[in-house]
Length: 166
Image 1: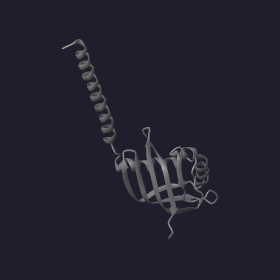
Image 2 (image 1 turned 135 degrees about the vertical axis):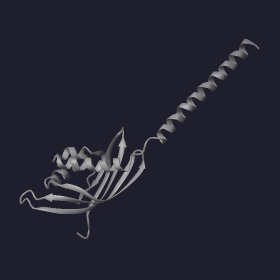
Image 3 (image 1 turned 120 degrees about the vertical axis):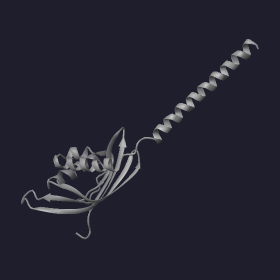
Image 4 (image 1 turned 60 degrees about the vertical axis):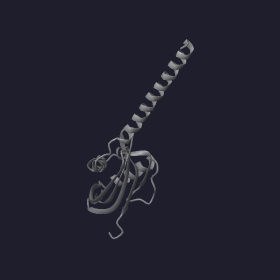
């Protein structure tokens, strides 16, 4: 065997080894993504608890922090679509004046994948009139779409509408 044919053979074997290692690494990365753990329904339910706790702070910015910048909010007590942070803060300034306390009545959680979940059902808010102190209940249908980005769960879509029969 000539020196030249040995060099070619070494080059071919080296190239094949690099391709194999690269293919394995790419396959492992894809497998890692496929095997990313889906959140348990209990974890998804806890996201609402976090949102409800933010309401109790009476800080509209803290509530708005639970929404991605590109989120859409179709709120319970407003006809205006809230598609940016400023308009969500504006909504929560007014909503929080009623000292809302949310409680889920019926919930249906669908875990779509490791980074997106839907939580839909019926909840109610106990609202306190800031002038009279009178309490009333607002019952509504809801849908939250939560999305995990860079390891953090936030709301990307939130729809809430008063029950038509109430």
